[in-house]
Figure 1: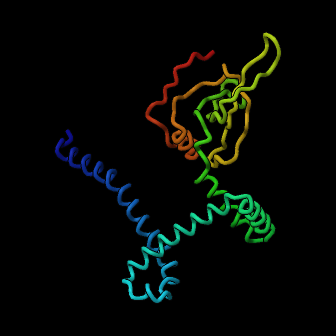
Figure 2: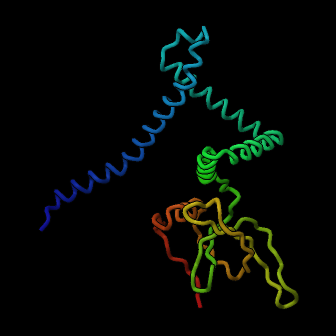
Figure 3: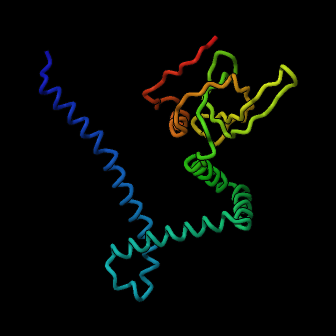
Length: 213
């Protein structure tokens, strides 16, 4: 018979680790990024006479926040027409360089995956795809409906994006009859977690009440 006290101690210890670990990792990553990027910018700021007398940690913080402002300004510029044109030109330039293009395209794909605009996706749904009897997770992308067919055979169809796993930036755009769409009730964030993890990460609620024939 197992000792209940020993079992409880082990359980509490593991619970403590699970609770502290995400917080500790978050603090570690934040401090690491502040030091990394703050030091890079801070080295340049040391040449400014008024800042040269400041303590090193103050210069690091100023450097970090200066970098954030610079990134924000770059974001504003690249959101404009000229900025988008320059970005396309940059993509075209790097895609022609023999070794650099593989590194650049991989980095580009990674950032697209991390920072994809999830607000454009409405609902997480299931559809029978690529054949009947197999269900695929997808996202409703637009509430505007298509009308396909004529007379009694006319059907209202929904815009659905089916991402690939583990890279959700690529996938298939489908126009699916409304009656063939099965709502999951899952938040968009959970839909992404399931797809990116290849089904390793799943929500607690996995029951979808629907009549299937």
